[in-house]
Amino acid sequence: MQEPLVSVRGVRKTYFARQSPVHAVASASVDVARGEFVSLLGPSGCGKSTLLMMIAGLEKPTAGSIRLLGSDVVAPRRDIGIIFQDATLLPWKTTLENVLFPIHILKLPVAKYRDRARELLAMVGLTGFEHKKPGELSGGMRQRVAICRALIHDPDILLMDEPFSALDAITRDQMNVALSEILETYRKTVVFVTHSIREAAFLSDRVVVMGGRPSTIILDMKMPFPRPRRFEIEETQDFAQVCRQLRLTIEAAHGHAPPAQTAPAGPSVIE
Ligand code: ADP
Image 1 (spheres, rainbow, N blue to C red):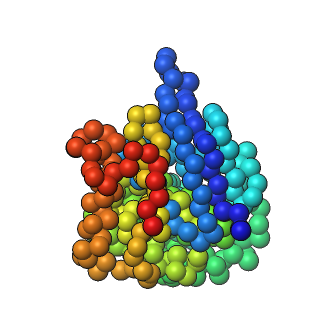
Image 2: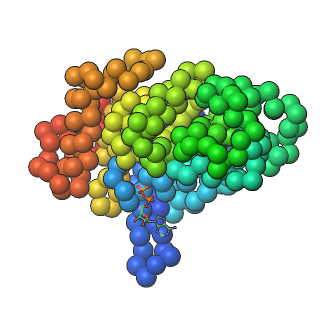
């Protein structure tokens, strides 16, 4: 059997920066197969970003191991692309220059990637905006540029940390559809952090719910919706039911509601 592209095994993370240690992730094990879209879902503070940053090699686990493409993660690496909540574009550079920025950093031949940058920008509907500066773009447009920048060096893995949570609800819905379309063209393995149940259900092949105190993985659930996905699936009974189950699982783990009948006591996989 093929080794998973991302393999997280018995990972724990404790921060010792403050007076008392913060147990950000008590225990997490999760595999992501090539081409799979997996969301880490849970309320704020349950360790989603910490787990993502460990996968990115930007934080070190206190215990456990993380492997990407068959090798241990010991430092940041070039086979990943990262997208954060804020687009973090360089304000003095144009759209095209921002997309090409990783190529400069990686010391690759910029001329060779210019066409790819234009193709990516066309894919996200930004043809004609190549020479605009970030200040001239809307929030949704800036996040589209950030997606192109993350894809420019053709990484195998995309790591996304709440990339659309600062956008208004309508733009966010549009970005969800745009991201689905981008991934239909540029097939990638994605780990996506969100606290939006709807967003996780819409985008993902699997939703991994984190929660509890201290935080662990409490549910690993396959999304039963066929692809390509468009807005309409959100109006179906199946979609509502999946969202309900995710919500009840989160509430049960945080004591906001009586435990749901379907909420598992420990990690479980629902096909
Ligand atoms: P989430 O992404 O689910 O909102 P985080 O991973 O950001 O959660 O944080 C999990 C916990 O770890 C929180 O209690 C947070 O305050 C703490 N934490 C995150 N980063 C640090 C850090 N660098 N130093 C100390 N504590 C941290």
